[in-house]
Length: 309
Image (cartoon, rainbow, N blue to C red):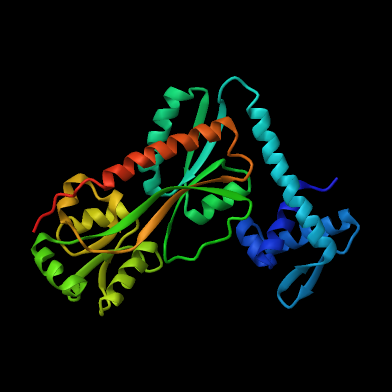
């Protein structure tokens, strides 16, 4: 019988095109992927692959098997959801992977709701980057991923996954109150000579600051680089310099530093599950809770911010 994990690798290869990309997605070595694909070819008694430079393509036989493998894997998830739905109420273990702010914003409130609405569901939390959360989800090591992505970022394939949009969160400008009048008069160009607080150069917030400055005709001088939006807020809150941060990460006592009427970009917060598992009762009740919590957070973003300056 063909191994399910090898079929997952075949589906990855059909989607990604290279053994290296499959290895990166599955967090294993390229040689391990190649070895498993060779075994799969032997098990199927057909020629599944053809090499074209660095790309490992699929033959017609490979395409047919990949198509059926997708159906098998999807049917397996649907079967597990159907079995879970036969019990009287949601129960079992739900493993959730989330980015850092997603834990306080969404996951912790979700756990509180489930403790009341579904006490037989045991939630386990892992703090992970977006890429690793999706990889763990594909590998079946987590059941639900809470991720964030910036509108200007590249978007990896969501094949085999189902995404539930939760929050479109605006980025906002924090600045010392002494600069607010100048910003409202001259725009971001008023901050060309300031020392900025931001994330690492390759982070979403680090890129967002550079894009905002370039649109206003200058290159921001970032002198403080930190990991985590809340850390950026706290340092910018000392008045040392401006920062671009997601709105929901700004603590209430620092809201007066947010400058109104400055249009920046957004980031999208999403819940992601494997296709076919959204009907699992414990997954479904978690998704409903996340949607309700997100609606409350969105209502809070529409509350006028008290501004200084």
